[in-house]
Image 1 (cartoon, rainbow, N blue to C red):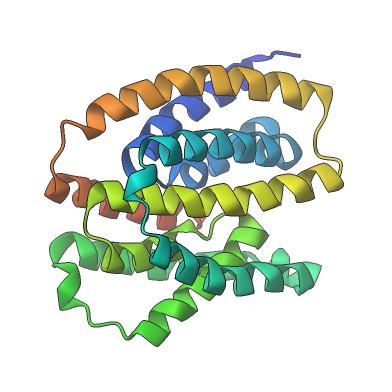
Image 2 (cartoon, rainbow, N blue to C red):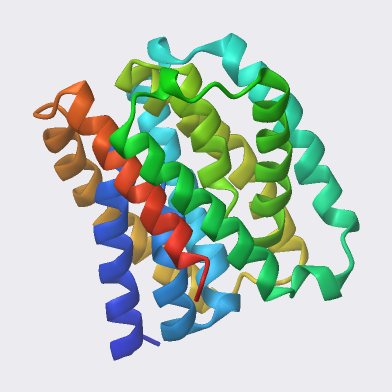
Length: 240
């Protein structure tokens, strides 16, 4: 059934996926808080994940030659460790709001640093960055919100914007496809969800078109500033 809440939900999908197309991340993280309020977790999670798979696939197709496969393998290895660990976390921890708040504060501070200083000024050892990837995988499993930590790694390791977008989108395609399987297994998909997803994918086609037009018009410095701003907003969204 299409309600006013559903229409607003679809509008959120459209706006956030323009952003997702431009940067290669942040769409789901930005869409999740208002979507939870509008349609609830059981509807929002599978649909946003389904739309994210569609967007990631399109970005991967257009940027396939730009994907850095060595980085993909390293990232999936460490993210996969954390992601798998999420299945063994007790429910009491999964529902602990303070974990997301601490996580959000850390992400906001790093985003502020990246906005005002060049990445090379921040000397983070590789082993720390690998821990970020493990934690990112864990949080993505638990809250579909591990993206900011993964983006911090990519921000330091990948300079070209097309390499950045293509590589990250392939990572999301893999992770969200796994989440799709868990959503189906847990019975989150209904006939109504499928209808809303179809509408969401339709409007997302327009979002991708607009996003691709915008991304061609911005230079690398502006692109990275936008990335920092979205990283900050992603962190703030963890507080709610």
